[in-house]
Image 1 (tube, rainbow, N blue to C red):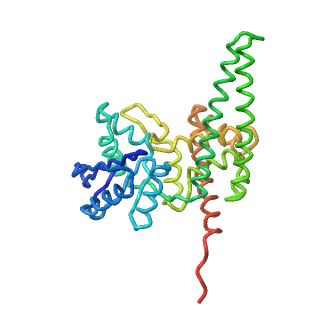
Image 2: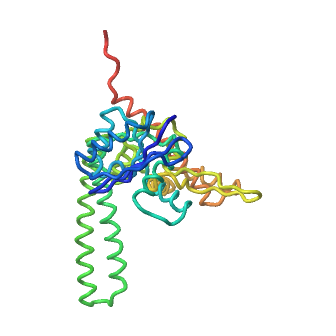
Image 3: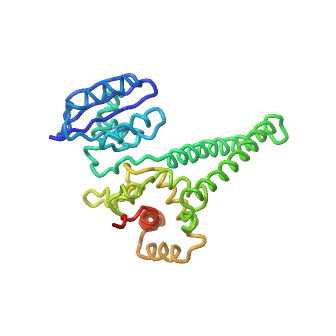
Length: 313
């Protein structure tokens, strides 16, 4: 029998739940986020052969060193997005605590066994910090600009908020420049993809990591939030994959918007789909799926070109 161990990590503690292949909770454990606690968690896990770890937010800095130890020891680790565990929590009631979250992380992996293996790297972690910091500052910038519009023209309050917005805009531009530098250092060819600039390039490399962890273009498209069928009876609906990466879905949307302005093929595809009776939204989903598959093939080719070939005898 194979087991899945779900882990809900926190800066001070880690909570684990072991589930069998039928989804039955076998045991749970809570340890301190210390070297001794990590050792106790590994010793406890030895009871469960054929185990696979489902770690919620495996790239978070407070759990990344321990996850690296797991990978170095040959353990199989999947990074479960918090949005996916939240789905299982909503299905099973509103109750929420660390044990429930650990169990839901395990259930998410049991229900989605094709989740890609976690593949961390120093470059990826740096890109994640950079892209997510830029995202937070950009949100603050937008909020300040909107707040300034609601204040009286010429007022001291509007002037102060405007100064804050100007400072944020300067810092966002600085992060954009850093993104471009790091992308050029890691994989500059990404910037040659139509619709991809430094900001989107940094997000792609940060979220995707090692593209070889995906079994194929369809799996990659699903990871990017590719459309899934939600039909029932006479009702036929398609929606974004709720278990996908929301950030990568945003990336595809932004690339699609750029291509609709500058790429004749993308324009023709959307127009053709709308001519077939699809709505603009549905036609954009088709375009985003094409972009996801193209992105997968490009990243796969770049990965192969960088991988060391067989050593000659």
